[in-house]
Image 1 (cartoon, each protein chain N blue to C red):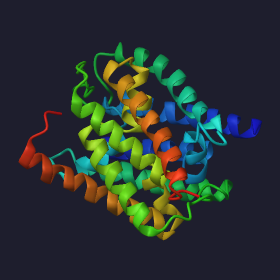
Image 2 (image 1 turned 90 degrees about the vertical axis):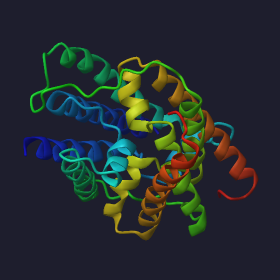
Image 3 (image 1 turned 135 degrees about the vertical axis):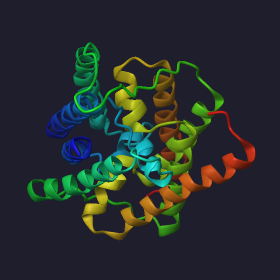
Length: 142
Length: 141
């Protein structure tokens, strides 16, 4: 149960971070990606802030033998840059630019009780299901 | 404008703290697309915490709205089908590419993962191209 409530706390804090930063405002996100138009670079500081903090804490935390509420670490250790990684990120980026939502802000925006985030999240889930359907046939080597 | 930068930095730091807590407590990377996808492909004893996390995000949205009223402002006035296509692309792309802004952009880059660095550069570049292209085509305002 500790695992579940810690996940709840992390989600809560994460969403507050997203909300304060401006990531839940699609027009602001589009403005950040509009490099060749009226570029609004402020959102770059979301990544800067998060990475500066986590680059330090990651190294501190990884020195521990194990996490508090789990026997093992679950950290990806792959190093190979695959076509799936690149093509997948390309497709994701296109969708991000078109809708102004990446997954975290989209789910957080369900709290707005507006219908557009609901449509987006449902479509995102459909996209994930579609991946499994296509992957079952073509077997992309992720 | 300065205020926007400051808020972005503060919000970003909070995100950094939250993903650090996830690592310290559960030993996990906080990748939202992976967490959502995991709910859709349930594995025993690895699903409930994901629902709690998602609930935390939504509750966090409600909480933030109480002290920052414009948190959900600035939605796009594109038609609904544009949102559907965007959602499909984001869902499909993040699973194929094994991550999104949080998993690759924050957690992966923080541990200097070459895969995440490549993924992040690619999805930001694709986003820039998409916005430029869809503005030209009149899909985006």
